[in-house]
Image (cartoon, rainbow, N blue to C red):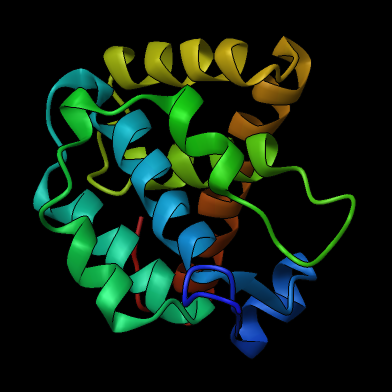
Length: 163
C-alpha cells in the first residue's frame, strides 16, 4: 500500500516548463522548502520577503497548501541538510537536487534585496556540503544576477522602472 508521502503529486505547468519535472512525492515538496529555509536562514533569520518568496514559488510549482503551511512553523535553525536532501526527488532520473536547491536558495536569499555576506557564505558552505563544485556555484550566482538584470531591463523598457 502506498502512503501519502510516497504518492506522486503532479507539479504545475510552470514546473514542467522550467525544470522538466512533472511530479514529485509530497515529502519532496516538503523537504525542498525545508532545505531552502535552512540555507536562506543560515544567517539566523528568514525575513518576511524571503518567506514570501518561498511561499509564492512553491505555489507556482504546485506544492500543496498543507506543505506550504508547514514551512511557516519549520524550525530551520535546528535542521540538518544531510537529513533533508535525500528526501528531495522528482520524476526525472537526471534531476540534480543539489544544483536546483542552490539556485533557488540564492534566489530566495536575494528576495529581500540584501544578499548579505553571511548568506553568500552560507550558499558556498551548502554547496560544499551538497557536493556542488565551486564553478557551478559561481555560475548559479551569475545566472541569478543576469536574471535580475533582464527583469530590470524589461521594467525599464515598458516604463515600470526608471533609472
